[in-house]
Image (cartoon, rainbow, N blue to C red; front, side, top):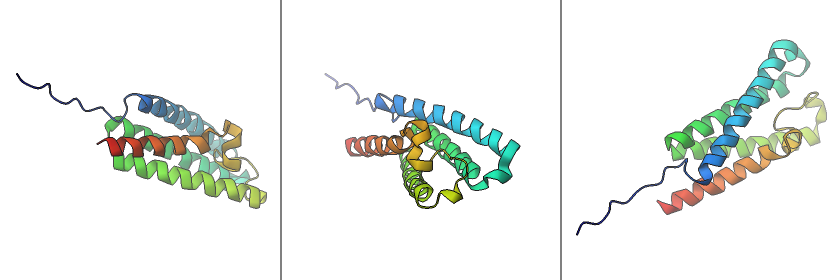
Length: 134
């Protein structure tokens, strides 16, 4: 009798699919918004618009890394995202003059229903749980 081969779950399976979906939605929405703002009124709030573009790029990197099973890259992207949303969120309250227009991460993502704050926490918990399973 031969034992069945162990089937390894992909990083983007199960709850990972939902995380990837949200990352893709946010990459597209934040990227489109930032692209429009950079093209039409960059001089009004360059920091806010640049940070939104950076957030979109990080969302995209996280989604692609999870899809490809690149756990270390995914962890790094999600970690940077969490630091970014916490830092920008705090700065946007401490010195609102820096953010005349909101970025994705301003006020901890309040303009996006706080998903930008919750998403990296959920992503990190998921990725760390999957790391333990391996």
